[in-house]
Image 1 (tube, rainbow, N blue to C red):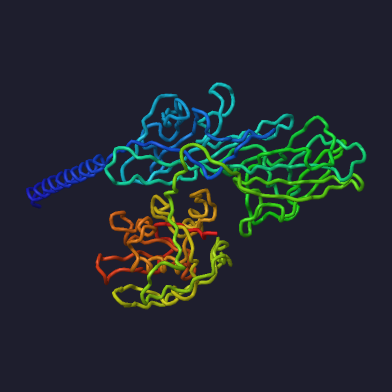
Image 2 (image 1 turned 180 degrees about the horizontal axis):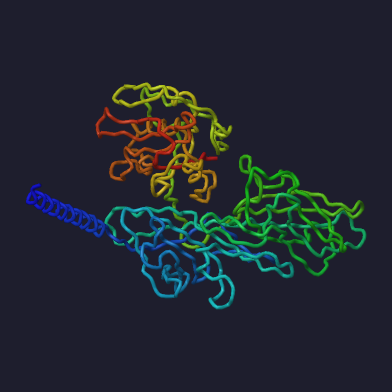
Length: 554
């Protein structure tokens, strides 16, 4: 055995290993250096709302507008689930001004009351969680502005002189810092009401007899929809799991029921919102204490807010129920009911939403000879209920592959005949201007969770709760539209350009090929007049791809 050869080889191994280690170290150093070159941009904010109230009432403490000079928000700024700077995932933001003619000034503090200057990396997506709650001073034992990390507590169990405070939550939860080189960006916080506002007005049928009303409540007859204690999710404004099921009501000194509706006895409540297809007739009831006896008036679904096949009490809606007690037959009847959005405005001038762009394929676009597919009639919301899979009967039908490469005019693209013809295209929609998923995700994971669909279902951009995955036919048609209309502003806003980093990125659609595969599409563009358009392909559902969401404009 030649020991010299053995030792020589070992030395070579050591030398090569060291070289590789050094190379790896250099590579890590380069990566770290590149990361440090990403500019950290100062963050500022403005506050606006889709709706807010203009006046308070006896029971709820409603937000009446930012007419004062100082307001406190709970705020969280994160990237990939981590604070952008230490403490930015749990901040108190204070918006203040000297007087009504002065500009708003923002300052920020962490949960130990230390001052912060929030920053975020240029060109990177951020998660922005914020809420407004007129919180008391720390140390009072009540809710303070750092509660959003674990949900915002609410307790509506008190019936004697209840004090209900409204909560507003930010709907612009996704924000990407533009790569413009600016030293500061202003992030719009657009708030929405978390609760529904319910007003119950009671009179009697005839001016006869002494009937006194001493209490009113909203309650469950079945279903457990009304919850009176728990936490509100700051990202969605909805009740978190673990909340207590129970009535929301008020007890007062007995008041004599009037006949004249102008003098109706009025009770007002804030109710944690819910909209669900499982809500049935008479699940929910209004209960009244008249002369010490409980009178129950069940509510059919027709007297609730409706959104597609979902019923309940909708966020930001003001429902008024006019009830009449028939003091001859001792029963209740509903004279009428109304439902409107809570209106008004506060804070800075309302910002134009930046998280989605509106597209109307029905007119105004040039198509050449391209087959844009079949456009559904506006109002035909075919895909709103496509919440599960074809195999479970909740996602239409499979659309198997039928490749058909097409050359039409100057455009060359990989088309599929079934995708083009099997499903209609909703023509008037909004699409998110950035990916909703920070990282690529599977269509369906190994546990059967519909990850991509759930991301859109839970998304609440603009305060809307009807976001969904685009169908393959819809994403195909949208990218066909780009072929001849790529310079239009609403299309540029969608950020599928090369500079955005989203060109030739595969996006999931909601359309299935079979049990194991779904359709994906990317926008192909070689920056010439010939090689551009949608590239359509089938992908294993376990693949991790990007997600954009759309919603039908109503």
